[in-house]
Structures are given as C-alpha cells and as structure tokens.
Length: 217
Image 1 (cartoon, rainbow, N blue to C red):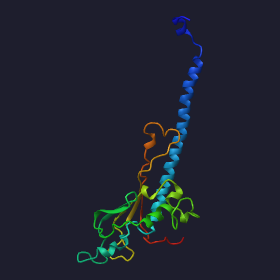
Image 2 (image 1 turned 120 degrees about the vertical axis):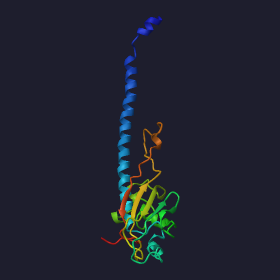
Image 3 (image 1 turned 180 degrees about the vertical axis):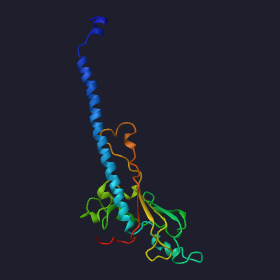
Image 4 (image 1 turned 45 degrees about the vertical axis):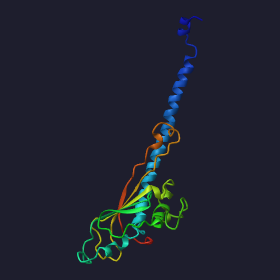
C-alpha cells in the first residue's frame, strides 16, 4: 500500500472516535458522581459543625479554666457585677492547646481533651456511630471523618455575663473545621483534586450552660 493510499484509508476511524468519546464520557460521568459526593460531604460537615456548636454551648469548655474566668478578673479594678472584659480563647484540636489570643483571660489556657471528645464523639462516647439518640450524637456521628484534630473552638466575650458570675462567663462559641480534605473516588488521582480542603463551615452560638451535662429536654 502506497503512502497516499494509507493517508486516505478510513478503516477503523469509527473505533478511534468511539474510544476518544468513551474516555471523555467516562470522565464526565464519574466526575459528576464525585462532585455529587463532594456536595454530600460539604452538607454533612456543615451539619456536624452545627451539632458541635450546640454541644459546646452546654458542655464543659475545652479551655478548662474558662468557667473560673469571671472570678479571676475580679479585683481592685473590676468589682463583682461589673461587665466582663473582652477576651478571645482559641482551642486547636490538632495542637491540643488553648491560647488566649486577645484580651484578659488569665488561667484559661489548659486544654481539656475530655471536653473536646464530648463535642466530637458525643456524650459518654469515645467513638463514632454509636449514638443511641440525637442527644448522644457528636460531630463524628454526623460526619465520621471528623476527629478532634479537625476541630477548632473559639470562645469570645461579646458583652454577656458579668464579673463574679457563679456560672462563669457567657461567651460566644465558634466551632470550625480545619485540615479536612474532600474525598474523591474517581478524580482523586488527578492533579490537585486530592488536596481540596473542606471549608471551615464556621458556626457560632451563645453559651447557655457551660456545664458537664446539658439539661434534659
């Protein structure tokens, strides 16, 4: 067969076209499935953060000294009943630390792993998927990939509570996620898809009763 005949030959063209189109269609279909699963992960993570904030509002603070803060600031310059000073305490589960990032918050820096465990795993639990009811559910019962290392909790004074209050301050509690990537089954091997982080999905709520157990409903 001459070179000119080989160039004009169309045998197998359909097979080549089908192969190319099939590869494109597979990427589109499997990619769509992955993106739908990513939306599911987003939604589950957002719900888990909301659950974590709700638990944190009625449980022991992860910053173990926070409950004593309203007494710790009472002194010559601040009498019982005076407004609480502004403060911000950030508890990072990955570092297992609580840091006073601004304001007056003496003695609240100790990190309480049991309190973080309650928020992540639920009341009276140290694992996921064992909650007998919504009351006992933690963040990982909603989204099983969440661990204490993925959680950041911020306690900040926003004008509620008063110095000397027996129950401690009434901060705004903010729960957010960190270092938690999306999981892609089909696109995970492609460049950059394996390292797309889930957003922090921050949820804030006012502390109601910083105690070891929420009231019964």
